[in-house]
Amino acid sequence: MLRELSNTEIISMMGQRLKQYRLNLSITQREMALNTGVSLPTIQKLEAGSATNVTLSTVLTLMRYLGIIENADQLIPLQPESPYAIKPRQRIRHGKD
Image 1 (tube, rainbow, N blue to C red):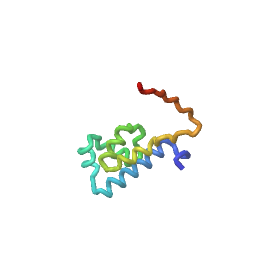
Image 2: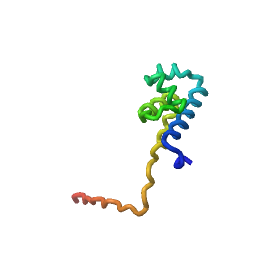
Image 3: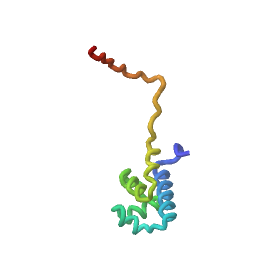
Image 4: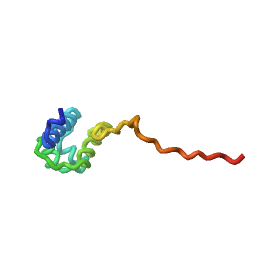
């Protein structure tokens, strides 16, 4: 699904999701701005879907404030180790007898 969306559409979707978390916590945009250091206009634009140049740092700050920072791990998940990857040989040290 996301593959078919433009970056602008994904940012808009994320803004809507952040807005829903904020509303569910009964936090105003002004409170979030004051407590995060993110400007009120930036929060308004992000939630409206009109902010197209929001930094990752800003998104992480808002996620942390809303208590959903653990979801940031899914932005770039760990790549599973390939079973075909060549593992470096471990050096074997023999102890002195």
